[in-house]
Amino acid sequence: MSSGEEPELIWLRPEYSGRGPRPAHSRTSIARAALGLADREGLDAVTMRRVAAELGAGTMSLYNYVPKKEHLFDLLVDLLAEEYDLPAEPSGDPRADLTMLARQLRGILTRHGWATTLITHRPSLGPNGLRVTEFHLATLAGTPLGGTAKMEAFSQLTGYVCQFTDWQQRSAQAGARWLTDLVRYLQTATATGRYPNLTATLAESGAPPDPDAAFERGLQRLITALLTAD
Image (cartoon, rainbow, N blue to C red; front, side, top):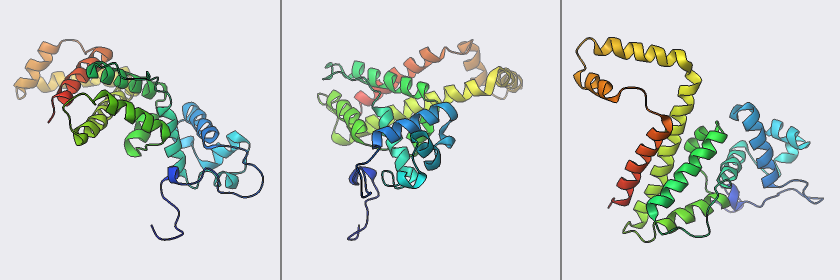
């Protein structure tokens, strides 16, 4: 970064860059306004103009706090991380603690249906995100995992929860007709005899799995793999 050039990361910038009277807003109040807007109307509704209107402020004045829209998204991601309800210290059982983290993330993503896209496309580690990361690393402190494996475990756990939640939300949005058509399509395909392994697997699986049970099974398999990684 050349001399005089502003940092790209919002967390390295001062909270307010304007002059004159005491700031009327804060990053937290701006993020909460954006969160409310996203929850009501979806992420596409979150623009600098709309957030400024939520706060009763002028659009240009908002740039004194948030220089660009991408920074607004960074604030949103960090505000989501504030919703984790973490104990003061890990329990000493890495599996139990990783399970808790994953379940809490799933709850956050379920409450805010737009959040999966934002977290997977623009990950950000603000103060709240660092708090969650520190807890995750403390959870794994007593394991034989090295530093790289610990950070990879955090990313992989987050990725699993995001992917599963996104699949569940998209399936719900597709509706019952889509699911009925999918079943009919698979029945037609397996009847050809060209997919014996798929036919056997579907016959063994029976009814579609309960999403909560499927989430837990996949989560525990992943945690087993993470805790035994090199």
